[in-house]
Length: 269
Image 1 (tube, rainbow, N blue to C red):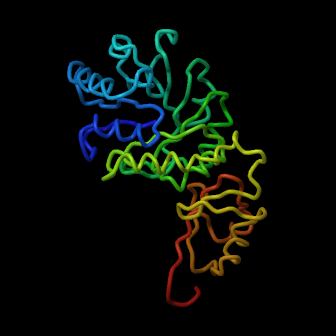
Image 2: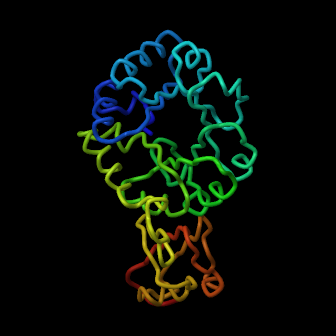
Image 3: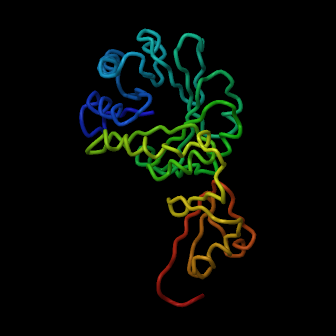
């Protein structure tokens, strides 16, 4: 799902939407919250003129325009949901398992922010561990959003997400069609529902890159495997900076996110 934001777009939104669809985008969400109704309608109509008949287009937040233009509707986490039958698609953003489990009537959920992103400055991200918890709290399809690059797709799908939402990864690209195609190609053969066998090993993300471990191990064992001394690193495990005394007790699990900062030079303390 492409999420629009004309302020960061490398070219007119219509051109990006057309290119992104050629590259494999499956839906477009119009998210232009600073526009008044008339200007937002003009943007929506421009996008509708650029997409094939029947292509899913979703309006973020504006119930009136979604109804008037027969668009899907996407709502923030705490906004009251109107009659769900009035929209071809109904979605909501969620940021915690509790919100996901309390959401019985939408067609999909968008979970995030997964990784830190310039679109949400200051938001640390819930990581793959947080995404996995949200997916496990609902039977609805969950799309992951926030700082996702093509190399993240396999890990995002591995913890149960059905897809992704992308903003800057396509909007800011010099070639939006190629950027969309990179995301689309990352899905090929990677979705768990398409695999004859479940993935083997333990999939984690280390310093933003996916990694498959052959077996479960502690943080201490992981550092030793990488040839890193415990006194020369700072380790963040699922958003929590660990004390060195906890390295032997913290185990790496499927979907965990680890950041390791290695200090170079000096002596052991």
